Image 1 (tube, one colour):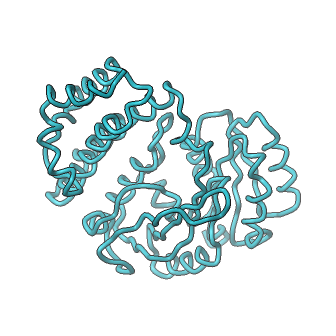
Image 2 (image 1 turned 60 degrees about the vertical axis):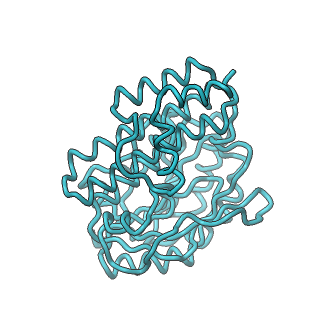
Length: 329
């Protein structure tokens, strides 16, 4: 362990050739450091990503290229975790950026406290580099050593795992890998991370910059992709609910229920708010699958006042279908 790198930076890449130059520029502060390894995971790219990655690896001793058949970002991240040798893990998408001055400072803090997770904030940026909106963290307290459950209780919303440095041994010991083949895998796995972690610190430091562009998953507006994106919410809510069998304290049960209920509420609200490319049969299937998983009607806590006020209407299936039916094709 003493000879292990302090940090493994895992970068899943699928057809990332267009972003490779900016990725290379971003990680320059890490190049040839013996205490940090950079894992470029080629996820079956069909462009020149693999060739660019291999060339990059010849220029820096701490760059490793991993090659696998296409399986999606979750599979690429899992592959990176299993092949990493660092004490801590960080995750960077090929088209985003990290502030490695901030990451270095947080890594030192994680090492000093033997933390399982240390979290930072992100900012959304458009393709011109302009800030868009706010970050993710809306907590009631920061910079306090707590369990993940306590941070869930203080307001953490499961979301991107790119805002964490995670102890590799913590991930491996608890088998906290990504569920493959679905979107929203970050939301599902970050809840499991928080439920399992005993030593966590959240900070207000901004260490990650997420680029929003027309090619992102949420902007791929084809009917099939939109329907998969929404149906995966059902899967995520079901996976979250199953955690209740592992965490039986009243606090944990309440927080798990609140999170999966909010996923279900958001799914139904998105269908109501943006029904483009959806039809009656799809909505019927969504509701049927939610009922099969005993996720609908929504029972128990929700996160926001608006969710709580509208739960009664959403829970009347006849009324919900009438409301949706007016907007569906």
